[in-house]
Image (cartoon, rainbow, N blue to C red; front, side, top):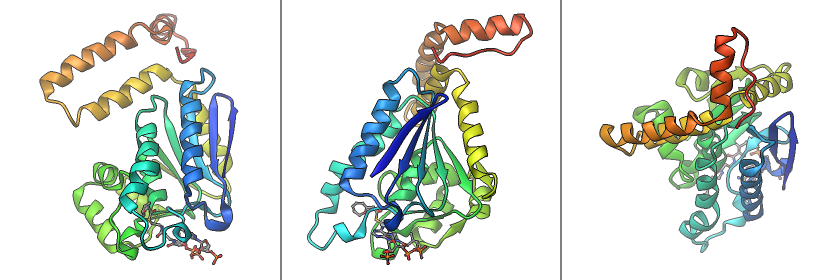
Length: 254
Ligand code: LHQ
């Protein structure tokens, strides 16, 4: 239900159920988790792209699989929460290449990523309320941090489509890309990130997240430890050497 390939330091993870607008099934959830795990532990991979096959990014949970009587809490605990945890703990940059509509948990997936490249024909839809549910899979957690409390509440309560241009104004989109330039620009964006000091990016992600849960005192302690670790990388030596030699640094991600 997904395809996975690695090219020029970038792992491409493509949701592949285009007839269902790439709706999630249990199997797809497991395959995504496995692909993130593989990418996280592979030396070759320095950036991860999640995108969708066909005209959609992801339409959320496959609604033909959740008839009445299904324990939705259990589904989240077993299928979705582990996937969201896997993404959150991944210390490599993850890019959502939002090629088309991202609805329900598909929206949550895009929110959990570090960057959102958004096609001009894409849109975001917090669809949950339209079927009487609450935004799940970390949606409110990430959405409020990205767009602020008031907008998060508005998008969640009204359940209306947010077009690409509006998403950009709200800070939801890192970049909006035209259909003609889509492939080229997504690739260039990912390969640029893949050429950066990967370990430092992982630490930046870790400490930015930690900052929400710690006091300043605790945070500064953690930060010093993070910088100690960054200072031991080959990329740090290369960065300082390249600066002294007035040339562009060649980072290797170690
Ligand atoms: C679909 C789906 C879909 C199945 C389109 N499932 N077939 C997790 C676990 C536990 C509890 C519950 O919550 C969750 C998380 C969730 O994600 S809940 C929210 C689930 N998602 C939604 O409510 C969104 C439902 N879809 C839509 O609102 C629309 O399809 C969007 C806005 C995504 C796209 O609209 P259109 O571009 O007009 O396309 P369409 O509606 O015609 O869909 C095309 C086909 O895809 C169609 O099938 P058909 O056989 O008629 O061609 C749809 O039935 C199918 N499809 N989403 N989630």
